[in-house]
Image 1 (cartoon, protein in one colour):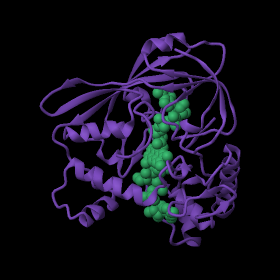
Image 2 (cartoon, rainbow, N blue to C red):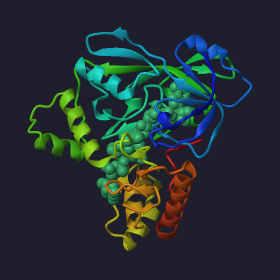
Image 3 (cartoon, rainbow, N blue to C red):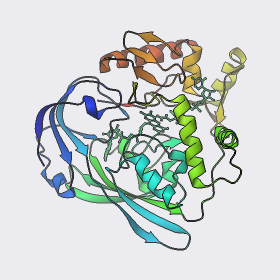
Image 4 (tube, rainbow, N blue to C red):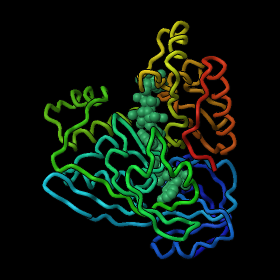
Amino acid sequence: MHIAQHISLLPYNTFGIDVEASLFAGVSNLSDLQHIPASQPVYILGGGSNVLLSGPVNGLVLQNRLKGISIQQEDDKNVWLEAASGEVWHQFVLYAIDHGWGGLENLALIPGTVGAAPIQNIGAYGAEVKDTITQVTFWHLEEQRFITYSNGECRFGYRDSIFKNELKGKAFITSVVYKLSKHPVLNTSYGAIEQELSVMQVTEPTVKDIAAAVIRIRTSKLPDPKVTGNAGSFFKNPTIARSQYESLLHQFPAMPHFPVSNELVKVPAAWLIEQCGWKGYRKGDVGVHDRQALVLVNLGHASGNEIWQLSGDIIASVVARFGIELEREVQVW
Ligand code: FAD
Ligand code: EPU
C-alpha cells in the first residue's frame, strides 16, 4: 500500500470541497489492511457522498478500492450475493437487476459504495438495505482481525447502525452479503413509484421497471453531484412524540407526518426547512436546493465550514419555529 502526502480530496467527495489530506492511500487488497500504520487517525472513504469535509484532514485517508462480486449460496428461491465493499453501489444494483434478482431495485441510483450501505442503512422509496443484508464482514482496526456480523448484530435503525456508534472509526467494512429473491415481490408502497409507472405506461412491472421509475423520480428531484456539489439529505427526518405533533398541528394544520408507532411520529425535515423559508436560499456559493429543501448545495467553491455554518443556521431556525432539533445525517470530518 503506497501512502501519498498532501493529496487534494476534491475528486473524492460529492460536495466538491477542496481540502487536503495529510496522508492518503488506496486499499485494493485485504492484505493492505494489516499494514495500516497505527501512528495517526484513520478516515475511511468510499465514494465520499455522505461526508462533509469541514477542514483539512490531518490523518490517513484510506480510499476503498476492494472489488469483486460472487454468489455465496443459492437455492430455488434466493441467491446470497457477496460483494466487496469498494464496489459502486448503483453498479451492484444493476448487476442484481440484470439477473432478475429482487430486493435492491428501490435503492437504485444511490451514490457511493457497497461497504457504506450498511453504515447508515441506506434507504429510499419504501426500502431499506437492512432488509436484504445477512452478513457484514469488517477489519477491526484496533483488534487487527476480521469479524463477521449477522444482520441482528449490526443493530440497524433509521439511517443508523452499530458502525455509526460503538464501532465508529474502528471498523473497515470489507464485504457485505445480500439475500436477494429469484421470485421478486415488488415494493410499490411509495406512492410516487405507482404514479411514475403509470406515466411510463407500465402495467406489469419487473424489477427493472421499478428501478427505472426510481431513477426517473430521483433525477427529477435531487441534484446530480457531477453538476452541483451535495451529499443528498443533509439532515435526518426527525421523529417526535405524538403529543408534540398534535400540539404543533393546531398551529400548522398542513404539517405532513408519517406514524412510526402509537407514540411516535416522523415529520419530513424538508417541509420544516421549507416552511422556515430556506428552499432555494443562496449566500455566496452555499445554498439550499430549489427542488428539495433537505439538500444543501455547493454552488461553486464553498468551503466545508460555510456549509457547516448554513446547516447550523437552519437547525436554529427550525428549533425557533417548531421546537424540533434536526440532526445532521451527513458525517462531518
Ligand atoms: P462515504 O461518503 O465515503 O462515507 C460515509 C461514511 O461511511 C463515512 O463516515 C465513512 O468513514 C464511512 N465508510 C464508508 N465506507 C466504509 C467502509 N468500507 N467501512 C467503514 N466505514 C466506511 N443515502 C440514503 O440512504 N438514501 C438516499 O436516497 C440517498 N440519496 C443520495 C443522493 C445524493 C445525490 C447523494 C450525493 C447522496 C445520497 N445519499 C443517500 C447518501 C449517500 O449516498 C449514502 O450514505 C452512501 O451509502 C454513502 O456511500 P459512500 O461510499 O459515498 O460513503
Ligand atoms: N417536502 C417539502 N419540501 C421539499 C421536499 C419535500 O415540504 O422541498 C416534504 C413533502 O411533504 C414530501 C416529504 O417532504 O412529501 C418527503 O419528501 P421526499 O419524498 O422527497 O423524501 P425526504 O423525506 O425528503 C427521504 C430520504 C431520502 C430518500 C427519499 C425517498 C431521509 C433523511 N431522506 O427524503 O434519502 O431518497 O426519502 O425515499 O430520510 C439521503 O438519505 O441522502 C436521501 C436522499
